[in-house]
Amino acid sequence: MSSFQILKLEYSACVEALTDALRGEDETAFFAAVDHIVHMREPGMFKELRQLTGDLQKALERFSIESRLQDIAENEIPDARARLTHVINMTDEAAHRTLDLVEQSGPLAERTAQEAATLIEAFENLKNRTAATSGYDSVLQSVEGLQPLVKSMERFLPAARSNSELIRRNLADVLMAQGYQDLTGQIIRSVMKLVEELETTLSSLASLSGDMVEHATMGESESKGQGPAVPGVTKGEHASGQTDVDALLSGLGM
Amino acid sequence: MSKDMKFLVVDDFSTMRRIVKNLLHDLGYPNVTEADDGKTALPMLQAGGFDFLISDWNMPGMSGLDLIKAVRSDAKLAKLPVLMLTAEAKREQIIEAAQAGVNGYVIKPFTAETLKEKLDKILGATAK
Image 1 (cartoon, rainbow over the protein chains, first blue to last red):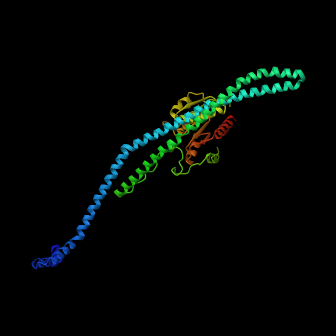
Image 2: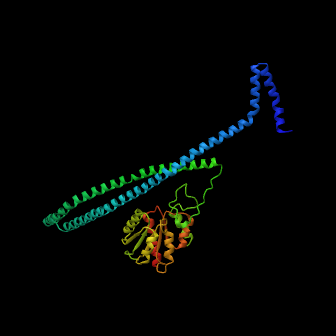
Image 3: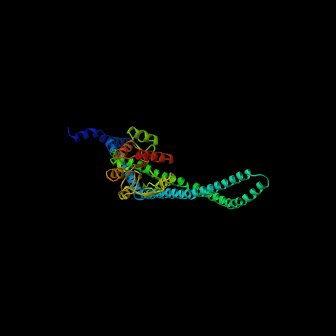
């Protein structure tokens, strides 16, 4: 039986019903027959229509993902690179500022301590000298001995005060210099957000394309170094502290 | 070993070089020179005069590991005491460094005490 004969068999009853309804001018029967014919055609047609809508939707999604990816690649990645460079600059600046202040304060404290030590020694000497004598001699020794000491004190005290004030100010500046942590933290967090978005965008693109993205294995030489171990990121076995390193090395006979 | 030993500190971050230089100064070693990677450091070492090398691992140009390999394969420098000071903390890496011939390995972040302890240990061993 040819395919047209099958069609004839399937549709002849409906067509007859339609013709009868037309002849009899029966509106209800006419529409019922039309509906019946449409229903017979429906499965194939609707399947195709659904397929078409699905494809269109996928294409639209793909288009929006791809244009977002292009935007990320063209604008946001260079932007993120610039932001991270800024983080390096800020941390560099803060570290140097702190080191400058430490280098400046150390000698000030040292000088004050040394001068105080000299004065303490001079007082001890005077005490010993006056203790060895008595009466008028002792008073005379004290007065004579105290004069240069008082002069030294007059020189020392203002210097000690200004040195301490300067050290205190430097410490306050050291404190302020640590503000970079907050700022760089925020920048790094924003870059992390971008990386996260990139990851989701890429994986949805991969699932739309219907293939799995093969994760590239790290084939690079260990000789290059990989930077600090980041908890939760760094894979493989790594030493968590100096004690681990020492244990490992002594195991190797070092 | 005397206190006027000459140190070469190799690190690509100038802040870290400064920190190490200050620490060495505090430990009584004022004679410290800096280099920012292996490529710069090697000719300085080959020119002679250095008694101790402290090197980072991860640097652009020539890495610390490659620098140490180059140092050990140079007859004049083969016995130079070398301390690796790095954030690289993988087990294989530490073993690789030991095989390359480092005398000590300190991981960042580190303390002044750890640095002193390793220096003393290396200097004590090489003095014998």
